[in-house]
Image (cartoon, rainbow, N blue to C red; front, side, top):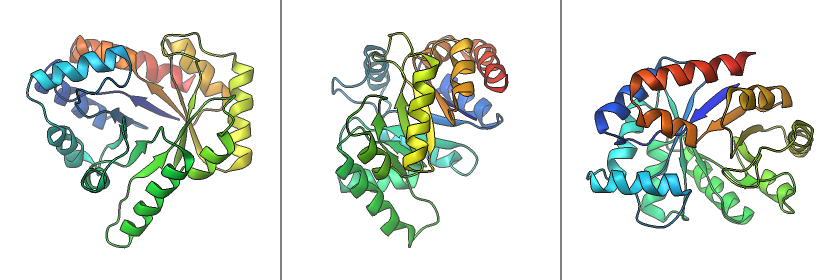
Length: 237
């Protein structure tokens, strides 16, 4: 099972974030999630705050893309898209990231993946776009069929809300797998090692560690290592 920590290059400093990325390079079954610095009011309040901090520090989208482009062969990376990419951004995504979360209509996700396949003829790697869905999403079937490589299953109604019951999550994972044999990465509201253990037992192929990863990153590499070991141990038990 994979763990997907959210890491923002440049937070709380470029040096600290690079140290954490280098540490994660040495860990098994990791996909780093990130977002581009932006003044748009998108993402959680914590992500918005951190993106503003990174902007004030002069970190650019190209800095973030290049951070992961340099390590792409060793460490997989995923971008949370907060708006539909234009042609230039799409080209940069394919060069820099292995996956992208596309919280858009299924037909847009399908179109993004079709573009990725066209590009595959010219390069070995391409970005796989996956849609977000929830257990009760009326468009779940369409979103699963539109996705490539993974589906992001939201396991809480709100970012800070309580995670749904294990049985409901397990049912949602089984429903997705019945539609298509595809990885299901669970996230939204995952806070503790117990949450990680429960999701692993429910059948998750990967678990997003969003806000808690950012909080650990803020405290520096030693604190991040301690937190990471707790999560990694829970993913095995």
